[in-house]
Image (tube, rainbow, N blue to C red; front, side):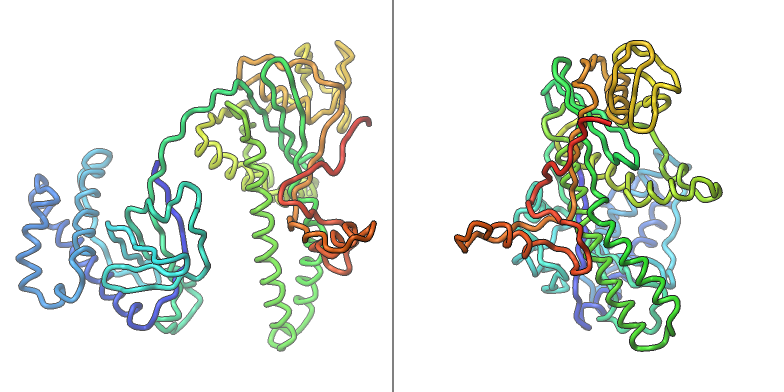
Length: 446
């Protein structure tokens, strides 16, 4: 499998100027190769490189750029011609000099990572990475890279930016080994909502378990603080120093908060994919469901967007693909109104979170019943009748490992946990201390 990893790099003035010359050279060579291919489509990549050698020796500005970047442009032109001949009409387009666009520099050889903060590139020397990277990333991509691309990500709103102040992002392509398909015989079904955001039903045909995962409730206090700060900024003078300071504080706060939510969602994706063979999900279009226009659903739409179902599902797909787990999409209609034991469907079966089948009299949680229906629609596994309406709830939020116990007082661990809680002084909500999610609340009755 082919994957990309994006990193932000810090450039010097000399490196930024040399990148501009490399970009201009690649554009010139690409257009030259397109002209040759339009005249003779049978030319191979090696034929173009032989013809380009004569042109390079007679053109001074081409000698100032490393040959590897120019060969990459020839490779891109030949690849574009193959794709156009296979899927298009055979016409090739020339590259224009974009003004204010996303300009990039590509190379067919991998960068050499000297350590977790520095990387060496041909002709550009050593660059410092903006963030420190772990040596052992998943599948050890630092040692399995095969090519890279430098993309200019400078915002268009920035005017008259110095070369060294431009924002460049390094995209490293690497190969991953194909994982072996899982053979556990366990299927999982996902039901998405607001009260119970992600309900997972795992069954192998003999046993069944229902678990609710919540990655949003721990950040409610952060949401209220952010909304209050936004309203305060709107009322104040936008040119004052205090307002600018508050804006910077709010942006930093939201940046750290987003990282914490991403971490919790990755933990959720790993928890869902652990020990399963196939994952069944509802084919819901959350963007269409939360689209503006219906004032009566404003609160419902805001709640669905805050839980970030699309981001959670995207991470589940990534982890499942890495582990060789199959993803099946099923029709979500009437999953919460149909009894998964006797298949009786009626609108009156559901009353809020309570599901009471009018045919067989089974009492269950409505979201757990829906997740079981999702499993049965996506697989041939018959879910056995669960243990009533018990739904284990696990909240995943800000995670911080508690410090080691030093004091031997009876309540020392409790005091240490309070000190380790990552929460503002104005909040009374408890935050999570362990690295992994744990049970915070269980539903045993309605």
